[in-house]
Image 1 (cartoon, rainbow, N blue to C red):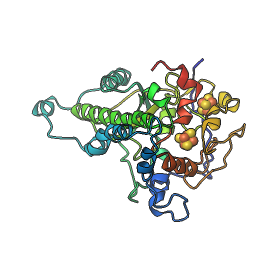
Image 2 (image 1 turned 90 degrees about the vertical axis):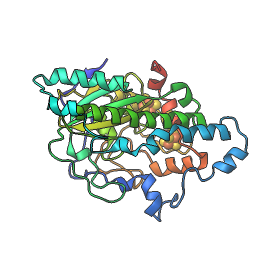
Image 3 (image 1 turned 135 degrees about the horizontal axis):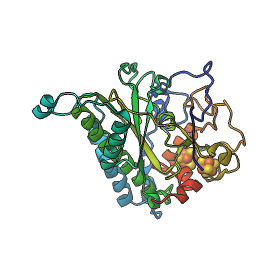
Image 4 (image 1 turned 180 degrees about the vertical axis):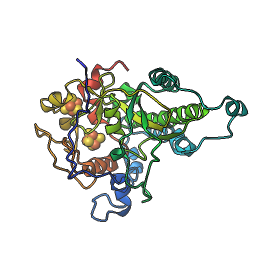
Length: 332
Ligand code: SF4
Ligand code: SF4
């Protein structure tokens, strides 16, 4: 049963919590953190040896599919632009700003539009500045102008059958396709909002933490595996978002019992080949590695071990998605 809440279903210690610095992710620490076991390691660096072993699901063809799946995400950087793409159509200038007398109707229309562009889930929340990164991956501070009051948060469902092959390469094709579909969807939705003569900042994993925003927007809850668990697709979704000043009605967060379910289910922890996921029954404020942010009550995932496994595997792993009962229940 899904309950609608007045407050998000997470607990933060404001004394310990601060905005996350994107340079703390394992993907950036590998460039600067000399203490990290994966310092200087690119997670695809062993792929030649892995392909040479000729194991099923680890062929050169599979690997070519992974890289190609990322094409739109990696080669269409304009998707993440804070400014409109191309010239404004003169007819849009004449039409002026779209009046929004009914934010609830506007929210419904935005959600319909996001689904047209490829979103499988859409929720809207107030933009909580504490989820915005303090600095981007280059070390530049991030400040979102105050007029961006809303976050439109979208879930892009991944190919469940491909994810089930994890940790073999076809599961990483599903990951790459999820990211490319994210780039396509946010770029189109941001342009739609700009055509109504409002502002839009589209983003994937950059600029702000996706999972707490998705929880705030009512898409799901945090799982033991450190991922967003949604009622419809489990953790088998990628998350992207668009910040905007377009007046919208907010969604409420949801509770469908994940916290209790995860206490009695260790399937993701058991499936993780490097024990990166906690087996503790209760969540805590303990962190598991330098990439974890302080001050959040949860099961912290050891992202260092996770990344080390990706290096060993030659590709992203999705074992903790593939084994979650909520992925199995999903319709995709
Ligand atoms: S992605 Fe794989 S290695 Fe990383 S936490 Fe999940 S199961 Fe473990
Ligand atoms: S596999 Fe079980 S413990 Fe892990 S996130 Fe899913 S429900 Fe929670």
